[in-house]
Length: 46
Image (cartoon, rainbow, N blue to C red; front, side, top):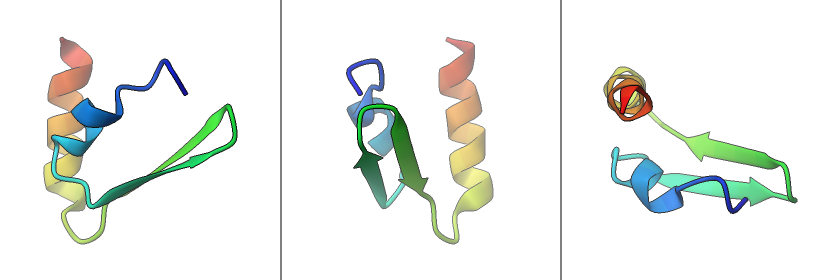
């Protein structure tokens, strides 16, 4: 999971991240789904 910037993902406001092994990640979003999706899109464009 070295390729994943967990701090940057958490800065979007997600309540949690779970790492499952070497190749799987789960981002826990909760009820702020649209807000988090918008922030992730901004990060992805950079």
